[in-house]
Length: 343
Image (tube, rainbow, N blue to C red; front, side, top):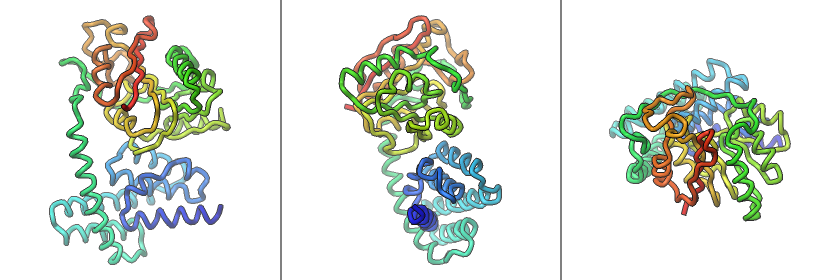
């Protein structure tokens, strides 16, 4: 075990020195949780995500680094080093090789004093150029496939919010979305499936009560994951990071009343298309039922960024996934549910 922990630290440090951001961005909180240098590793994971443009994931790991004892000075050094590296990447794009090398050298000297900065600068410069070419190709592909528009298929004139507000649902049981979880249970039994993941599982009350006979994975924010591990230590819990390429492999994914909380729901939907599953269940409030056909936002719930009516949500989801079923599951609560797949 000691060898594994030492190897992980050495590997991550090398990846940071050489600028292998994609590898650092793959570090998961679960693999760091019991590591003696978890605070430092969390900062390296954050650095990788920042350089890959995964800002939300970076914020999560910076928060974890703080919780795990990283000093303000250490955090500051890594963030400043990241700024120099970003400027260096910009210089690479502008074909300003000499300036790029200067910025990369500053990044290494600030983030890792004592390193062989001259040698590592050359290595990092080559790696950054390679990564930028890969990112450029991915960006072109995303732009080609982006058909939902800036309003996420919601009617013209609708006003969304633009700042995330956390909603604490750790105390909730099955007051909401009960039908969604019962439908999930039916699918699991009918198809004789074994594994189910719940993205944004909240208190996990419904996940454990109705799907506890199966192998479960619950995804939540860091503060909630720590609580869930205390409540249900025998279950698997992971921190939500919608920037991950392939994070979930299971029979069924549930994402119940999560999408309306996100400033940019495209991030979630794109993340879901990268995962490995047979069916996905999405649910969200139906705006016309909850607020009336003349509602133009923002939603009454301050934690909701926007709400879709039935037709809008079906249109939006269909840009990413194939819809099998789209129904209103609870008329009183105004819940709409979509069951979809990737094919």
